[in-house]
Length: 484
Image 1 (cartoon, rainbow, N blue to C red):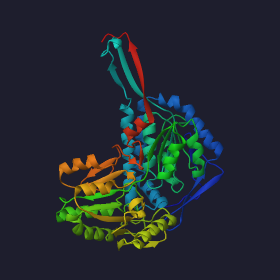
Image 2: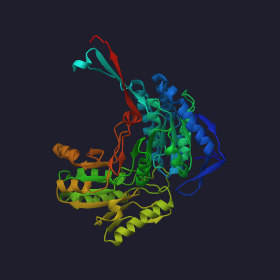
Image 3: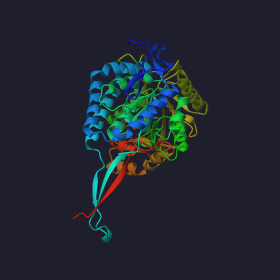
């Protein structure tokens, strides 16, 4: 793709602006310059926050059709510029372009659903109060109203769609938003701002500010931003929530995704399908997805037939240049990230784990890796790897499989390969996660469904409707003297 030589402006209260500093963005694949982003000054950041606070009441009162039309416009422009955006995602993030195209398509859907929700979402309910004598002649009406401006903090791994999961529900609910993209991948968020600039939303309804991470605490503490939606690392997320206990904080944090393969998933076709899905979705973003498959927990009845299939499927993945349509697995976001993954794998093998394939680093790239016989206390088993590494464990029976899946501080999603509907319901009851996917990997996510975790994986839910509920509260009006 063609790189931009002049710095991309940021978006301050819906208009272009430039600051005094710039942020250079380079490709994780080959280190080439991808572009430059202008960085807001402290005064410009303050201006954006003040504008959001000033716009809050006006924007909350904006007719639903205005917000819906703006969201529809964004979706249309994402469709019209899909290839351009996918190429930019791939260049700054290192994501294989075929996965970047899917990310753009998902983002279009998020804005489409947001437009639909803007038209119908008001939380409006009527409740007659004369079930008690003191409520005779009274009727309660409830509506949902925004808490106020939202601070959306997005990560690097989905630089478009995880920005959309902050921006789209806020705008649909009538809440101004200040979006802080990840420093490694600001260009895609700024392009989204360019598309938002083509809408008729009021001034102050949105800003895209690629401020450095050390400027984030001041934004987090700012009382004019009563809602914070954060997606990122576990320590940072919980530190944010602990620092502002009176704010509305939603956290989508890390995972340690388990794919459980039960004994009834035993035919050759079953095991081939499970192995293919596991291999793909332990590596599809270089493993840099909170719901990537990190742990395979296989019943002893199928383990020995599944394991070689998983290894073969992993080895069949195409690694290399993310700009190549054939590439399945590209680099990690940085060489430091790849070195960390390398050190965790070396630690596990030194402690007795068996390396079945992979384990090789070249720059920011790490070969798709499968480990067996992993000690229970190894980092690759206990922590979130966020890299293309998969562990496979044998267990005896369903109860042991579910216990092994739950043996984690994380609880985002789990996948269970079974044909037994009763086992599916038992999994849904037993697994301590935000989502259970039956017949597939934990990596499945439909962007309109409630998505989020428990335990160390966070609090609150994404998915447009559910995020809108997190960004708003119920306000009740009681009507007196009503003839019911």
